[in-house]
Image 1 (tube, rainbow, N blue to C red):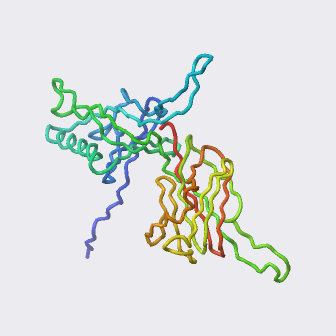
Image 2 (cartoon, one colour; image 1 turned 45 degrees about the vertical axis):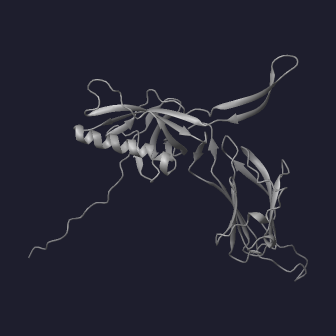
Image 3 (cartoon, rainbow, N blue to C red; image 1 turned 30 degrees about the vertical axis):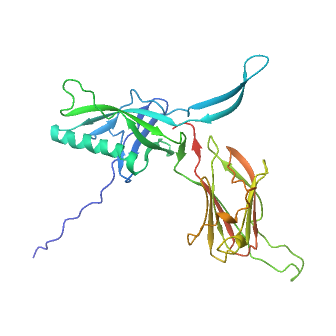
Length: 318
């Protein structure tokens, strides 16, 4: 007797989108991620919408405003360079098999971009063939108008979208993480004079592979009673004394997270501990490009005490 079986459905495999040659970037795959997390591939020319390479701008180095002082012998001296918001301009083509399908995609893309003005920024993601991925937060500014020419707006049309980026730098999607943990503690005199190993206390060189400063996030795991982080090249430092907070000393397994931009200190139970920093002298310092010597110091550290430093490198260009 033949047996009736359910059909075997192969798992859906996401399509491989070939990279597009983009001026100033080279071959790359571009994706727009709207505030809901929906991903819109922008370089898949087989789709009903895709970005056009001709006319794209704003993917290069960030714009700057320079402040200078006149020099008595002529010319001027640069006092300060301030990075400005970035504007990205990118033409987008939308098409459909008929007018109804075209309208559906046209309106869906318009909603995906303009919702950034109400629900928070979207992300423009550039993926290079070597696996590197960089993102930048974007807000819709203008341009979703269509050509307004004969034959457009029926089954196809294009818009020149302008995206505004409050932070002009591109951010890697791969974090850099540094972990240091205290080793087992031993009695100094038993069985003979010795020193406990500890990776938390001491100096560590942190490498920032990006183009500009980054503002790291620190996570400290107890036990610990006070936490001091020092950037050795500038002497900038900050100390969090747990006894000066509503939490008290960190016990084994408890954590506190210190964000340097914006300044924020939270326990793992959500308590605001920013008052425990040594204000007004505390400097929540950044990490410049390249190698930086830093010092971690945990008072009251025991086996299991640890420090984790995390940041995402930032770049001038896509």
